Amino acid sequence: MNEDIHKEDIFVKKLVKEASLEQPGDDFMPSLMDKINKLEVENNIANEPIISSKGWFTIGVIIVSIFVALLLSDSSTIGFPDYNFSFDNIVSLYSSVSISKVFLIGLVSFIFFFIVNITITTKKYFATH
Image (cartoon, rainbow, N blue to C red):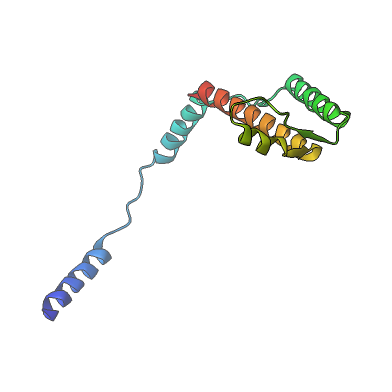
């Protein structure tokens, strides 16, 4: 058994020594570069901003108006009003919850940017595919 493995090992070593490194043809590099250039021309995508300056201005105005509206409101916290549902115990649970201005501003900002991100990402994805 050992002799068989030894013979195979010698045979493999001999094959590896005899095998030479294959060299590409003379026109390999120019041919490859031509193919790459053709792919670049076919897949040429213009570098343009995802959100235009007009879009950024609109987003800025919306954000500033939300912040101003929330900061100039009279109450220090915004609570849930009591509604007359048939489930009185659920209503009483939510009427005691109050939300601070900072949390509300953060939550509104997060939701806004999440929606903007999803909208822009899906438009860009479907525009390229």
